Amino acid sequence: VSRYAIAAIWGVESDFGHETGKWPLVQSLTTLACSNSRRPQYFRGELMAALKIADRGDIPLEKLKGSWAGAFGQTQSLAVDLDGSGRDIVDNAAAALGSTANYLRKSGWETGESWGFEVKLPPDYDGPSGRKNRHPMSFWAARGLTRVDGRPLSGGSSGLMLPAGRNGPAFL
Image 1: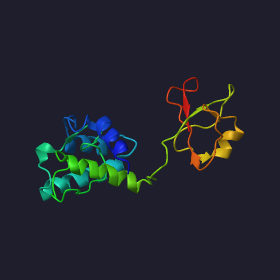
Image 2: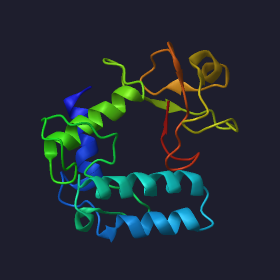
Image 3: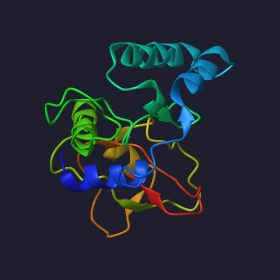
Image 4: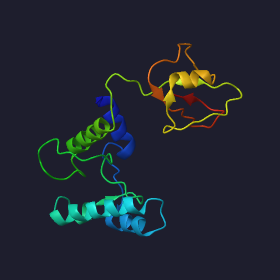
């Protein structure tokens, strides 16, 4: 996994470990598990995992802090013990970076693949968008999307991202 991608995620998620959250994790997860949230089962599982971490003594309860939404750790990733310490994914940068790489690998990271590229939408575009709405490049080309650099759409499948809406920049 690219060290640059790992560093970028670490910076965005926690300002390189400086901001890991201030909310007691057990209380946040309990609230989310018992509320009318969209994913109560997910948060119940996360709550049980947090309680097991505290019960085993892996991380002291007072250090189990995160976001109000239950996000936890320096990069909120699938934890691995990169340095062999066996403990503390909160304060351990090696564990945070190893966990980020582990998450990306398990999510299908492919070395050499680009994150995407900018495309132009036809003026009347009214088709699908969103990262989960993936289609082959031929699908997007048939709908009039073109790369801004003029190169042809080719290879793989992709979702159309419209971070600023249909009138802003578009990316596959």
